[in-house]
Length: 121
Image 1 (cartoon, rainbow, N blue to C red):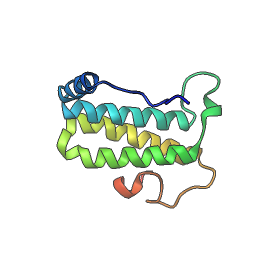
Image 2 (cartoon, rainbow, N blue to C red; image 1 turned 135 degrees about the vertical axis):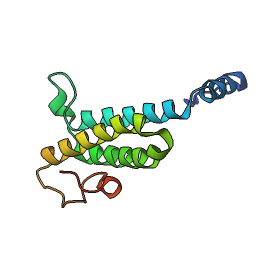
Image 3 (cartoon, rainbow, N blue to C red; image 1 turned 180 degrees about the vertical axis):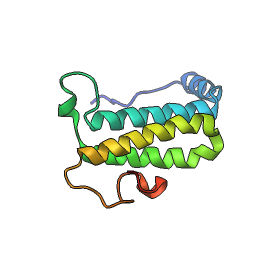
Protein backbone atom coordinates (compact mmCIF):
# COMPACT_ATOMS: atom_id res chain seq x y z
CA UNK A 1 0.00 0.00 0.00
CA UNK A 2 1.37 3.41 -0.93
CA UNK A 3 1.16 6.51 1.17
CA UNK A 4 -0.60 9.33 -0.70
CA UNK A 5 0.53 11.94 1.83
CA UNK A 6 2.96 14.40 0.26
CA UNK A 7 6.38 14.24 1.81
CA UNK A 8 8.32 17.47 2.09
CA UNK A 9 11.97 17.62 2.89
CA UNK A 10 13.10 19.89 5.67
CA UNK A 11 14.62 22.24 3.07
CA UNK A 12 11.29 22.51 1.17
CA UNK A 13 9.36 23.24 4.36
CA UNK A 14 11.93 25.79 5.52
CA UNK A 15 11.82 27.43 2.08
CA UNK A 16 8.03 27.69 2.20
CA UNK A 17 8.20 29.21 5.69
CA UNK A 18 10.76 31.76 4.51
CA UNK A 19 8.62 32.61 1.49
CA UNK A 20 5.50 33.22 3.61
CA UNK A 21 7.57 35.17 6.13
CA UNK A 22 8.46 37.67 3.42
CA UNK A 23 4.82 38.43 2.58
CA UNK A 24 3.30 41.37 4.48
CA UNK A 25 0.25 40.56 6.64
CA UNK A 26 -1.94 42.98 4.69
CA UNK A 27 -1.17 41.10 1.48
CA UNK A 28 -1.97 37.73 3.05
CA UNK A 29 -5.24 39.01 4.51
CA UNK A 30 -6.26 40.54 1.17
CA UNK A 31 -5.37 37.35 -0.70
CA UNK A 32 -7.41 35.13 1.62
CA UNK A 33 -10.34 37.58 1.54
CA UNK A 34 -10.30 37.69 -2.28
CA UNK A 35 -10.31 33.88 -2.43
CA UNK A 36 -13.30 33.72 -0.05
CA UNK A 37 -15.08 36.46 -1.99
CA UNK A 38 -14.47 34.76 -5.33
CA UNK A 39 -15.58 31.36 -4.03
CA UNK A 40 -18.76 32.87 -2.56
CA UNK A 41 -19.54 34.59 -5.87
CA UNK A 42 -19.13 31.29 -7.73
CA UNK A 43 -21.39 29.49 -5.25
CA UNK A 44 -23.98 32.22 -5.83
CA UNK A 45 -23.92 31.52 -9.58
CA UNK A 46 -22.01 34.69 -10.39
CA UNK A 47 -19.13 32.90 -12.08
CA UNK A 48 -18.37 33.22 -15.76
CA UNK A 49 -19.53 30.87 -18.44
CA UNK A 50 -22.68 28.96 -19.29
CA UNK A 51 -22.22 26.55 -16.37
CA UNK A 52 -22.35 29.33 -13.73
CA UNK A 53 -25.94 28.48 -12.74
CA UNK A 54 -24.93 24.87 -12.10
CA UNK A 55 -22.43 26.04 -9.45
CA UNK A 56 -25.11 27.54 -7.19
CA UNK A 57 -24.90 26.17 -3.65
CA UNK A 58 -26.37 28.57 -1.11
CA UNK A 59 -25.29 26.49 1.88
CA UNK A 60 -21.67 26.70 0.74
CA UNK A 61 -22.07 30.39 -0.12
CA UNK A 62 -23.38 31.11 3.39
CA UNK A 63 -20.32 29.49 4.98
CA UNK A 64 -17.93 31.40 2.73
CA UNK A 65 -19.69 34.72 3.34
CA UNK A 66 -19.66 34.15 7.11
CA UNK A 67 -15.92 33.43 7.01
CA UNK A 68 -15.30 36.48 4.82
CA UNK A 69 -17.35 38.73 7.10
CA UNK A 70 -15.47 37.52 10.16
CA UNK A 71 -12.10 38.06 8.49
CA UNK A 72 -12.93 41.49 7.11
CA UNK A 73 -14.47 42.69 10.37
CA UNK A 74 -11.56 41.45 12.49
CA UNK A 75 -8.85 42.60 10.08
CA UNK A 76 -10.22 46.05 9.17
CA UNK A 77 -8.65 47.91 12.11
CA UNK A 78 -5.34 46.19 11.40
CA UNK A 79 -5.15 46.72 7.64
CA UNK A 80 -6.57 50.24 7.47
CA UNK A 81 -9.46 51.69 5.51
CA UNK A 82 -7.62 51.86 2.19
CA UNK A 83 -7.45 48.04 2.15
CA UNK A 84 -10.62 47.31 4.13
CA UNK A 85 -13.03 49.47 2.10
CA UNK A 86 -12.88 47.39 -1.11
CA UNK A 87 -13.19 44.17 0.92
CA UNK A 88 -16.25 45.56 2.70
CA UNK A 89 -17.75 46.54 -0.67
CA UNK A 90 -17.17 43.04 -2.05
CA UNK A 91 -18.60 41.48 1.11
CA UNK A 92 -21.72 43.64 0.88
CA UNK A 93 -22.13 42.69 -2.79
CA UNK A 94 -22.13 38.95 -2.06
CA UNK A 95 -24.41 39.44 0.94
CA UNK A 96 -26.92 41.24 -1.29
CA UNK A 97 -26.50 38.62 -4.03
CA UNK A 98 -27.23 35.93 -1.45
CA UNK A 99 -30.46 37.71 -0.43
CA UNK A 100 -31.52 37.88 -4.09
CA UNK A 101 -30.67 34.22 -4.75
CA UNK A 102 -32.38 32.86 -1.64
CA UNK A 103 -35.95 31.70 -2.07
CA UNK A 104 -36.50 31.79 1.70
CA UNK A 105 -35.29 35.19 2.92
CA UNK A 106 -33.37 35.47 6.16
CA UNK A 107 -34.68 37.86 8.79
CA UNK A 108 -32.87 41.21 8.87
CA UNK A 109 -29.55 40.73 10.64
CA UNK A 110 -29.69 36.93 10.24
CA UNK A 111 -28.25 36.66 6.71
CA UNK A 112 -24.76 35.37 6.07
CA UNK A 113 -22.14 37.51 7.75
CA UNK A 114 -24.68 39.87 9.25
CA UNK A 115 -23.78 38.93 12.81
CA UNK A 116 -20.46 40.66 12.00
CA UNK A 117 -21.63 43.46 9.69
CA UNK A 118 -25.15 44.19 10.83
CA UNK A 119 -28.18 43.99 8.53
CA UNK A 120 -27.54 44.45 4.82
CA UNK A 121 -30.25 45.85 2.59
